[in-house]
Amino acid sequence: MSKKLIAFILFLSFLMLFAACGEKEIPPPPKPAQADPVQEPLPDPVPDRAKEWPFAGADETLAELATDLTAKNYFLIFDGSGSMAESGCSGRRRKIDVAKEAVAEWSKSVPSDANLGVFAFYNNKAAVLPLSSGPRDQFIRAVNSVQASGRTPLTQAADYAFKELTGQARRQLGYGEYTIVVVTDGIANSAAKLAEYVGEILRTSPVNIYSIGFCIGETHSLNQPGKTTYKAADNPAQLREGLKEVLAESEIFDETDFSN
Image 1: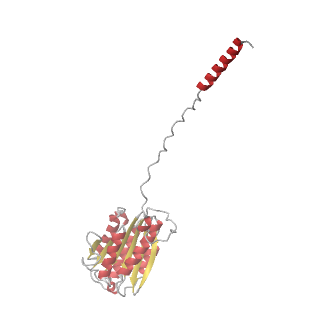
Image 2 (image 1 turned 90 degrees about the horizontal axis):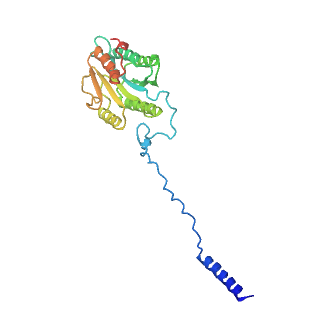
Image 3 (image 1 turned 90 degrees about the vertical axis):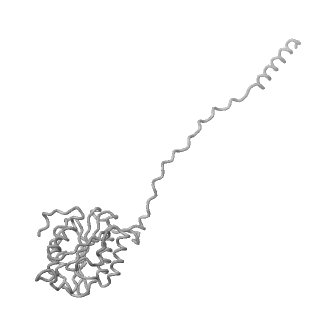
């Protein structure tokens, strides 16, 4: 092999070695940076409804829901104590008879889609009708069954009424309106205990308490200005008017539905 050929081969080898040393691996293009996922703002904390009326102390399993979740509810406490057998300011008629008629008239003016119930105490017992809508025949029969006798257990009656309204409020998921209506002619067996219990109802719930004192004036433990609504009825006409105002307070009263 000639010297020229050997020199040429060495020259090519040198070029190939130089080219190999100069090559660099081209890095892959950088991956696009991933943006942090956008987090939706968290909703406001859900209040613990189990600690609020009407769910406080309720079983975990709620009762069957009411058909009308926004219904208005009225629960009447009717005083059938012994003093209602007297005439008092009701003219020659017994107070119990005048009150029965007034309450029966009033019940017919309560809208049929509102719920109405009664706890009428007399002679150490009670005529009770749970809250219900529709015709008021059963309500009127319950009131008319009362025979004036016995004491005035207004605190026990208020407790029953409040529990009945609380149960209904659970079925309505807390919606709607709730009113205890009291027609009485006497002082409670324990006026201090009644005043305390009424205060508890008003502190822990939106239940309204509307009372009519028949022939007893303004002095009564249910008369708590700024908290309860109290009307003194000194004659039968004022008793009917006081009942009429129960519905006027709820802005659902139609004067044509209530006769004098």
